[in-house]
Length: 479
Image (cartoon, rainbow, N blue to C red; front, side, top):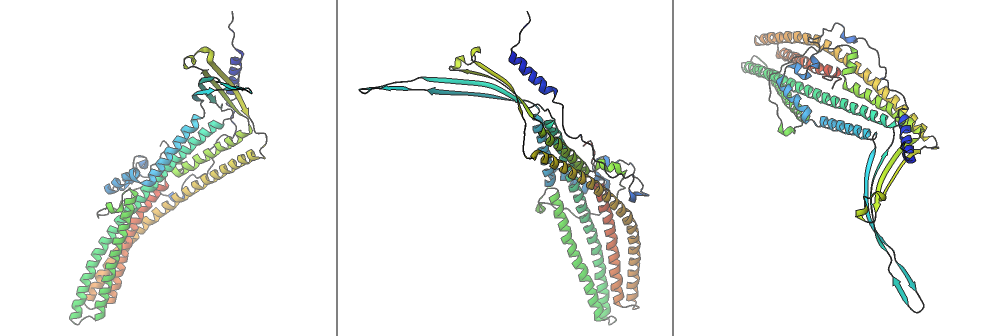
């Protein structure tokens, strides 16, 4: 004897199979990465000698290339304590939670409901001679039910929402890398600027000693009647100006120190960085090919992922043209006594398929589709602009690196020549061959040349940091 199935179960199973069979018909465009500018080589990299090993930036913290233990210690504190990085970390966690929320929509939701109520009724009768009242009935009612609902992803709307949220989470991960790289780069620049202030201060300190010695010589010559009073006044003016510049360097160094404290999450009042000898190391930075830049730069990765998220929004908007289907089922129990609640005769069940379709909304759905397509076009344009800006940044820093190397050599030659002129003019003044005005001029020129050399050395370090940032720092696609 063949078993027979209730007709309602057969109908419900048919509805589920129907919804499942058409649940792969996703609407909307498939994502393709936008085509960016095709560049085979960097213009300013001509003659560039690749560093060895060529993958130095891929092997841990990029700031270690500068061989400065103090910088290494400070840079590791940025990721832990910097508040801008903490904001990006929280944004990434929020984006990941959104992915989980959207993914949960792909599965059925199950609810448990229960309740108890007490109700009663009364009746009364009256006559002309007398009135009597008889009480009604009082009863209890207990309910317990389990219900579930599921929206099959027939047109791919839920799947695209998950994919869009995933792309947004990946963009947030790239934003986190950008925030970390920006904070680390800013820390390195401020640190090198502070060390430059220390070097400039040491330079001015030795210059001040020389100016004090020149003032003593001038005063002795004035006391002997050889030099005029104006020579003494000029020497005093020059010494005071140098001392004032040294005081300005103290203020400048304090500002860099405060900036470093904030970058590592410290209150400026609780942080200090002792003066130390400057180590003007400028590492050889591997450049690679432009296509590598598109994989390493976190801002480019973030922009590309936002294009993917915008693409999914087009599919979500287009799915509104099609009916929304839903499946629901429930099984419940009801009785007037708790003891009878779980008896078979008190059970009630239901299953159903629902469909809803907007027939007329004055073109609102079409407007949403057009708006999502326009948002996608904006995201593509931002991505391409980010790529162009990245290429520009690398070209700028490559040109600056090459020019500053030449400038440093010329500044060194100028400083050595100015030092010799200063010493010769001072000797000639002692022998009475020239006036003190020539001494002032020679000493001022020598100080300017020395400070320009220090500035050129510092510029090379900060440019190396900027080049590393333009190349994406330690960013890897796997991260």
